Length: 219
Ligand SMILES: N[C@@H](CCC(=O)N[C@@H](CS)C(=O)NCC(=O)O)C(=O)O
Image 1 (tube, rainbow, N blue to C red):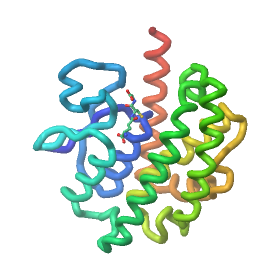
Image 2: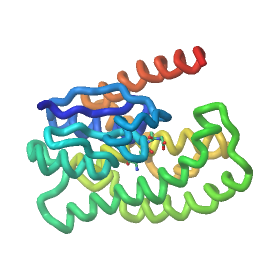
Image 3: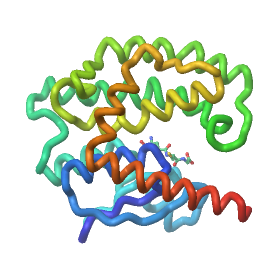
């Protein structure tokens, strides 16, 4: 059975796994699954109803970090984690800073930044307080030489290339300033966006954004 990546291409965590699969040249299929569906058959595959999740020959895996680790172990070709345990831990460390300390905090802004909602002043102040601390910490760890963890493209780039521009954009739209301005995101993305994998992820994301907009108009 071919691996099946489930979710939708606008989702940043979905794009992260798609970038990994493309970089590793792992064959995969995609199943379009939107969020907000609590059908028991879906909850069996992703118990919080979140995307992405992965269908494997042995069953489903939810949570993108668990999926990413499974892909690395099950498909060792073109490894995106260094063989050295310390260097591999440093890559994983970068991903935790990106996802837990930065993306999850910035996510507070997404309803207003991308979905026509409103974010209270209190939640905006929370992001203004928390995010700069995480960005300073991330900057101490990230190398951008030219990749996040150094000279090689790793799993940390699959996360950074997707999350960093999204966080910047949410900050600019809601807070009126880019809380990632101290990071070299523009130069980094100019470099990463030339990769064939990223060209495909960006193209699929654009198509899916149009599908999403059409669906919302119907509602
Ligand atoms: N920790 C999760 C985050 C995934 C996530 O938040 N996905 C969003 C779409 S980008 C989602 O499913 N949101 C719907 C929900 O939270 O109910 C992961 O790494 O897979």
